[in-house]
Image (cartoon, rainbow, N blue to C red; front, top):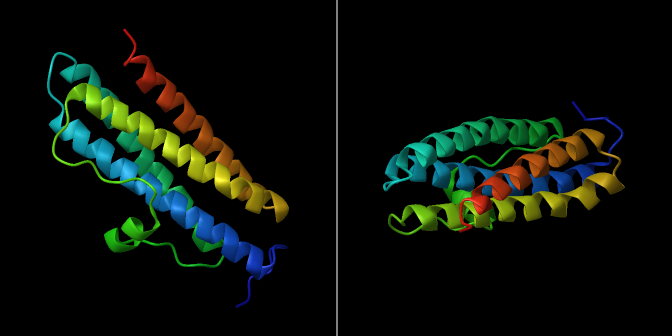
Amino acid sequence: MEIDIGIKKKDRAEIADGLARLLADSYTLYLTTHNFHWNVTGPMFNTLHLMFETQYNELALAVDLIAERIRALGFPAPGTYKEFQKLASLKEPQGVPSATEMIRQLVLGQEAVIKTARSVVPLADKASDEPTLDLLTQRMQVHEKTAWMLRSMLED
């Protein structure tokens, strides 16, 4: 059945493509954060272990919301590592970095997700796609706050 939600198919396709990039970045950040949760060591172990767990749990819920929005727009959501690698702007970490380097990489990952989300805003705005705009705003707020908290841990 055709989708008739007041947004042209071409616009829905452009928005869904942007959301697919956001999904790929968010999933890559989820995987990185989970990896760091498992592998962090050092004097800040407990603090970082718990912080990373909170962050990856939040991301696990977020990827579902993003994928469901893509589906609501009438397009398949990417869901394989191969697709995510092609779409993501984030790169996976190599090896097991120090705790400080983990924090730094997560700041960069949070900021990358923010930029990806922000790049979809004009597409959704042009199409008057308020549900996507709301989702993007919520995601940017979460990632900006998380980046700030992580960045604060790097200051002396």
